[in-house]
Image 1 (spheres, each protein chain N blue to C red):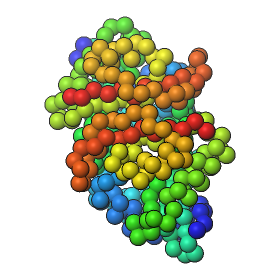
Image 2 (image 1 turned 90 degrees about the vertical axis):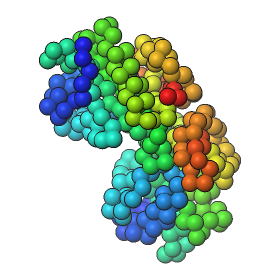
Image 3 (image 1 turned 90 degrees about the horizontal axis):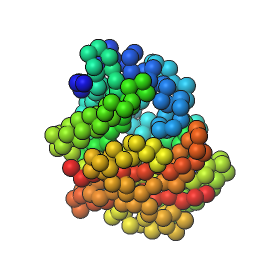
Length: 161
Length: 161
């Protein structure tokens, strides 16, 4: 598995699993009904951020986007989002992307990294982020309407870099 | 003082104090150097959100924007932002806008309201939000580079509606 910066040419291969994951309503508070065109801005980051893909040869296994969590006076704290193609779960793609992103943020001089909305029932992700050094600062109660579990909390997770 | 929905015609009167407040780097993590045109999307909300102005006759004293904090599965939690023209501070404009916004969110059926980034040294705002029923869920450490105080925390504030 390699991780490389995504180009616009990668988007048609990212969008199908992006759309599947959003539609499942288990992990992302993104709008319903995004098209390949309208979803681009929700995933493909512009500098100073970037979007990467985890690939096995020509196959995209997952993707991550990263950049400043806020502009201006908040731009020294990074954030990131991750999506692994459900067809390629269980291969360590999320961990590889997570390690890459934390290393990227550190190398870019960010002081910390913050995840704003980690669905509390997404225990695989929560465990992985804890394993990579993040802690839960708070949980916004019932802030995510989960397809299976109804209203569940959203963790704010944080790591000083 | 009246509070009414803002129109595009109000923006030229909002932008000067918006720009002043952003440039002061004491309360908002917005980008530096926004122009009247490029700043529009940072303040003038589209439905289901809205932007309002507090007015005294033809004079705009302050403004607030409000809407869903997140799209899709997060759209039942509202958020809002407030700016009072520094020339009209101390007249209760912030309180009037805050009361309006909480009432609006309740009437729209939102379950809760969340502020994502209240600068901890903005004690007037923090006290006002507490007085209106908000609590601090957590403080992101050193997440805001303040013009006077260096790195200070950002409160996540929350109120069930």
